[in-house]
Amino acid sequence: MHDVALYILKQLSVDRFYSGSQLARELDVSRTAIWKHIQMLGVYGVDIYSLPGKGYRLAEPVELLDQKRIFKGLQGFHLISSVEVLSSIDSTNRYLWQQAHNGEPSGSVVFSEFQSAGRGRRGRQWVSPFAKNIYCSLLWRYDDTHNGIGGLSLAIGIAVVNTLEEMGISGIGLKWPNDLLFGGKKVAGILLEMSGDPCGSGCVVIGIGINVDMKGFSDSSAITQPWTDLVELKCDSDISRNELSILLLRSINQALLNYKQNGLTQLIPRWNELDVMFGKEVVIQGVSNTLKGVARGIDESGALLLLSSGEIRRIHSGEVSLRLAENSGDLCC
Ligand code: BTN
Image (cartoon, rainbow, N blue to C red; front, side, top):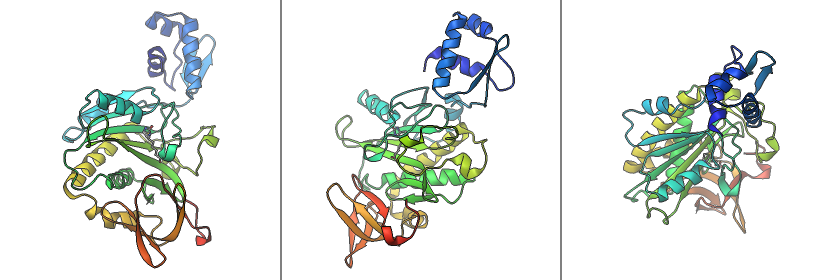
């Protein structure tokens, strides 16, 4: 988003009209230019009332992410080294990979208010309207891999559930490997991208998307699975995305520390408590084959345990999907 549009947005409020000529004076541009930026904000989904002779005001309050406030809230959480807030990017994961190539240190975090090409798992798009939700990526360079990295995304999933519980939202479960669901509807997703290429064997970008407020989001056909958001779950539209970001990063900091020391082992009981598939008949869909069985939780490497034809099989995440078997008579996840 253009800096001028962002400046305008920061000046506007719901309480009073702000005149176009005052904005034009402050920014040293024409009133037509202001009008064009107001139109552009509309394209981003920001509702703005305009009244001839009075100016512009917001239809609803917009809380933008505040880099200073978030970073201040992370004092003492030493695994987070920096926080950057962008107004618009294609994908925070893609951006942070590029930064990793340029030597960005471990613990760097990037948020964006908008993603034009947010990445989901299995090549899907992650729909990312402006200033509504959380789109966050964290770069983590690890020097010893004795716990393996396979279970990390599950540990992060638990950390995100813990964050939402701290926000007073209970009843969220996890679907292996890392979907956060409420009543079968997706509320958050996690995408870990790792490669030996840009930064040796120990570098991973952890991407987290949380649906906070999707109200008024018209293009729901772009989302291929049932979804919900925190405003609906909490019955409260007053969720501070800044507070949520702070709690999220504190929880991730803790999860990384624990994972470094203990891996996934101590988290298995918590996973089992949150696992929406535990004990259910499920189907694993691979690239070329399917496997039916009963979900039996996870092992210490993060593999799904599947009881199939009388034996336990270990399914490693990647390009497989997990869903309930058709005869299980439950909500589809
Ligand atoms: C999923 O499909 O469940 C994973 C979704 C992950 C979305 C987040 S939003 C921030 C980060 N940047 C991306 O492009 N994707 C992840």
